[in-house]
Image (cartoon, rainbow, N blue to C red; front, side):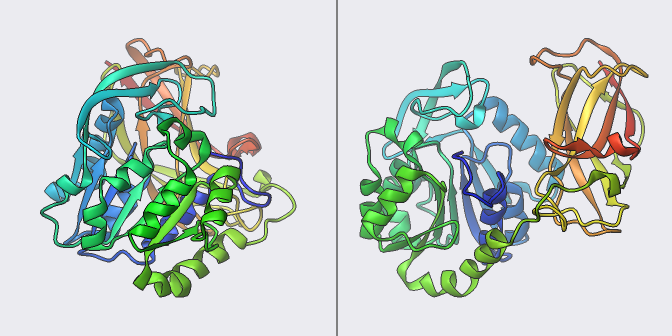
Length: 392
């Protein structure tokens, strides 16, 4: 992801994207999530369209896909076949090829090498590429398509021309020169394709970038990576409903300083499982923890009121030992006002720093809210939730 424009915090655009599609998705809709990864958007999309709707999610990486399937079963146990996960990469034509895996940053993986935001080792795995026109030929309706394919967006849309002309879904996609350059296309090619299909394009901040020169400049400068493509006859929906939401969210002024964690207090309790927790070595177990804002300051976007950085963190420890063996994070539903509480899912995998599995034995997982890059609430006396865990 490119650096955020001044005044916009990293991570804001994922929330802005969610605001956008939640503004028009309703129960009964059909949606597609290309590049579903661990389900950051698959889950909220599914929660909007169920019951009665469907989600088709595509995730080529086997290990990430396995996590996604487990997460969906845990979070949406009654969804059944309404939410399907497919192992394919998508493109302009069907093929069997290689997928470039960024081992240290799997979110950057794709069909081609790209500019990587962090140092990473690369490996290649065999993959089957399919075409959306073929996979969606039986659909009679489709409301929304989200694409995050690390540069493969043009070829995915090119392979969906028939679907886009027939079903006219709203499309959101990531696009930036650091990712698409490896695919032998230009920003002008993407703009031309969307024009030919009768779509108008807006960036995630609400700006109309349909003009070729404007879109090319935006994709080259990479101040934003997320775009919304609207069928021409649905542009009023963007102007009247989606754009005001984006402008209010991304345009909200930030306070001068970070959230003062000295005034932050939380209350936490395990919702499930009920009883001792045992996790097989190198497996992932999902638990539900209810987190309540027990202080007087809203946790949300910006600094008081709120901050983008409030998340739930956890560390692995030997019982009663202060040394951290490994750590992880779970997203909190923000904003969270004083007194409000939400049950959140925490994915626990017994892995230490460096990615090595923790030896079998007895451990504790210490959980608590923090402001990333600032402080844990526990540094100011907020109690941690200490959860005994057996690694078997």
